Image (cartoon, one colour):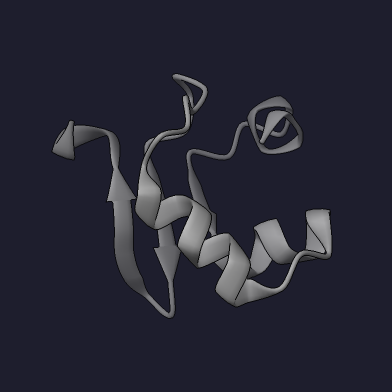
Length: 59
């Protein structure tokens, strides 16, 4: 996620994470659903297919 932060990106898509990591999208979604990650403060939300799947406001 640091590459996104360094670029000033606040909204990240699962597809962008996939391009950065080469992990399968279903694995990325599973990891995000568990919601046990600490996201950088600069990241405000994560989207998949134009739907917000994680938002800093939800915490």
